[in-house]
Image (cartoon, rainbow, N blue to C red; front, top):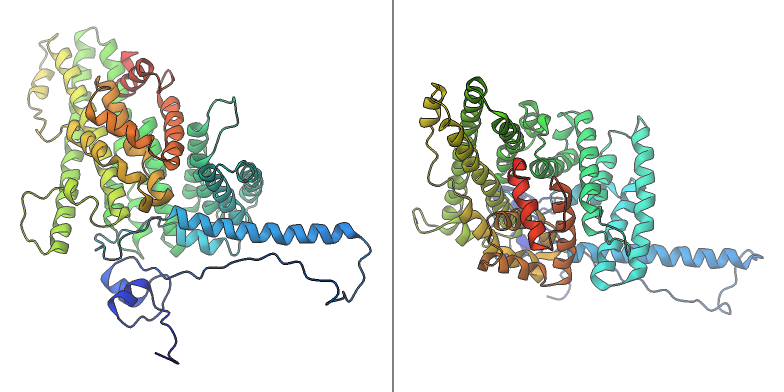
Length: 514
């Protein structure tokens, strides 16, 4: 209609033709419906134009020509940096179908809102974001100049972040936490220089450990603030994932204060509830490692009795965590049925609905499968080891083991299969770079499972390898995965070589098998 301005409402309100109050980051309508709120971003185009000196004369005559050249280059570089960061967000964030029905109050890249706001006031955070943008675009577009400039920006951001950590006024700020997050993300995009061995896995973990120390120093109260909460939940996921692969528990994340205080001003989402459960897994894996060492050294009745008692306690923890994960799955299925208008549908599973509620939901479901895969396999391994010890003794402790009944649903194979069959979705065009960056944890677990169980020639293994070679985005993840696998394996190795990969995977599940 002529004379009527275009609506500036969010995308959801425009589509549903509802009045939008324009509140940001989430409008009233979207907050009420508990769905992700997004506004259409204005597209900027920068044009470098040489102005004729005949039309305009400078008010002050410049005698040094080099000053003009440097200023011109500075403006050009700034325009390029703005364009590259804008392009980065476009290729990074996934594009959900406009008709997607979101459930569980889950959003993709929840830290994005905090980083975009903090960049406006903290220059070193912007530099870290630019490093990620130039490196990722440089790799995808095979632009060596972007890659090299990304390395330079990373070095600057690292120095600035170290300076901030030494400054008492900035050490515990949101900006420092955001910069550490971006520096860690850079490692997953990084291209190693020719001839150098990859250190991505170790470098990423070092950034995660540094982030954890800052989070702990800030205290749980600061994790309840607006931006602080977004950054905390992201750091918590990274630390838990790293703790699982390294079998090192980050104890404070699973404590009562850290699972309650950060949510005094926020409601827990499905993602938060799953992370509460995930936080206990590194501790269980750590106990299993210690138990396997005890089993290897158990030679007399006293040590065998202690091993069985300790093992029964670990098995009870495994079964308890498995039951709570199953409860989480049932709650998720109830929400999905409600969204579909189906009260009861026994044939519906997480596999069937994993791609129906947006990429953030898909990522969450694959994390659930990964946790179940990593929990269920070692549970049976622990039971078999204890059974072997029990057969060598007649002590009363064996009665405790006979009372352990592992549920039939604690089977790792279906979860590894689910990840394999859905692996290609991580690298679809709509998934963005964010989708592919979330693939490393679940795909790494599935690859290790099939390698450790002799499944190199299975259809599932072929699906995983086909997905990792499907696009430039997948190639980036493949390199990061290899580095992570090498750094997590007790004896190292090259996962591209099947024999070495089998040894690496087997020793990860059971370090005493080396």
